[in-house]
Image 1 (tube, rainbow, N blue to C red):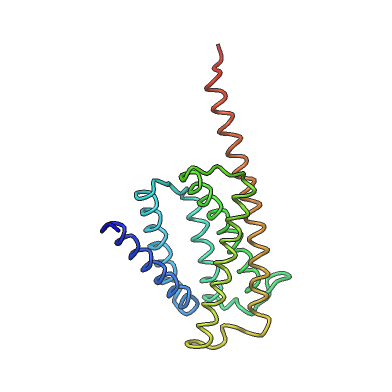
Image 2: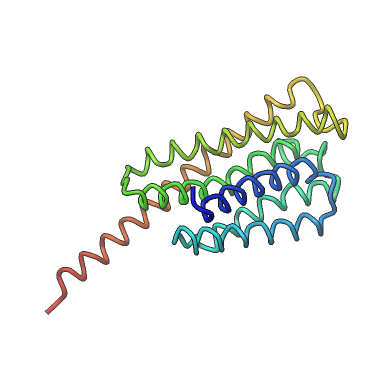
Length: 204
């Protein structure tokens, strides 16, 4: 393994650990700390992916991920957890909306990564694969909540059905976000095909 590969592997492990620590402490940090960490982490991720893997993530997708992080931070800032938001508890609303906002970014990134590796899969298959990735990350987040409950801060898990309820609304958000991503990707492909067709057959 080259020095560059070793450095990249170390950087990936360090970033993963930093992300886990952030998620572990996120609901106990100040709103300003959440904002700063979100901006720094997403900026570094964008720069790394663009310069190392030649994939330019649309800034709008990164903004969606940033907004998703702030839904949790704002809920803690204003004491919304335990409060009702329409027919849902804020915790349920947050889990669903975070996945709605994050899922399109994951679907887009999975599609571009597969295309970079020479795999051109149908949008539906790409979206399904991306949705399983997002749901796996959601399940891992619930494990992080369990660690926080057991070893650091009690009352992060509010009852025997809390984890199952969180995953249920995570799944709802993933389905909505993935369907939205499918619509956007299909529209993008149709637009690109139309542009390529117009270039191939210019008007005389």
